[in-house]
Length: 311
Ligand code: GH3
Ligand code: MG
Ligand code: MG
Image 1: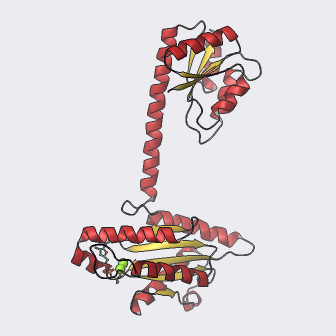
Image 2: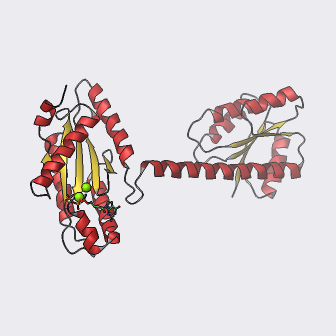
Image 3: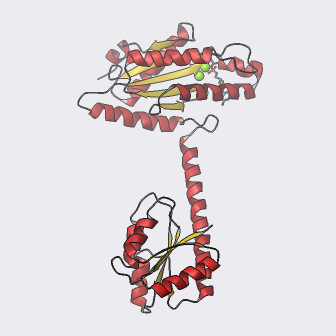
């Protein structure tokens, strides 16, 4: 049922409003002062429609509106001021406080219902807009096939994490792992692209399930994955990557008779570099070495890389 909040200190007017709205099918929450209205409208699951009397003891209508509008991250509330004031200056002040609409008392029941319908239409549009924005945000930061973070997002996350780790008095270690499916082209060529896609999805889901909630897993390229392990040293990162490698190796993908394997390279902050790009480059070098030495293995980036890179 649609919920609406009424705030009016005048008992008769409040009862009249309540009756009219209940008759029109609304669930009514009625309060007699502004502070209660402000509190209720800021609670989770609050009514998204509100009729606020202008003049109330304590917080008046415009003050309630200001309180509600100052909250961030809340669903939009459509607020209508009830006023016996007729002066244009007053109305302008009310709208400037953030009111969406106003009704003059004594109200006309049909007009009241029509105004609330307008409010509901606006809320529906607002919800659609928020949904579309969320969807766009998801699409901009995630890979469509696996729903993992995409490359640009993991690059942002890595940069943020490395910068943060570098600021600490006692530098925290951060590990970066880059994994690549071995001979993936053959999987596609032999079993078809759809089977290849399934393998990518399953590898993605295994990687996600094997790390902690505050680690980040991304699809870094076609069949490449990047993992950020926060507060993780080289020894621990190697253990995690090794576990992931085995998890993939031992999985029998339906429709893919031969085992699917991954190779991975690992680098750690601050040992292999103090910037994101140095760490990515080092992890890539580890991956290259893993491929060169026979695949299906995890290789910690050579330390020589840092010594060789310009300061
Ligand atoms: P290596 O062990 O050296 O990594 O060999 P590889 O065959 O895995 O590497 P290569 O780079 O030669 O081939 C990668 C393949 O990944 C080629 C490309 O068609 C496939 N690929 C990339 N993205 C997708 C995708 O979204 N779906 C599927 N099915 N295949 C993909
Ligand atoms: Mg590959
Ligand atoms: Mg590759």
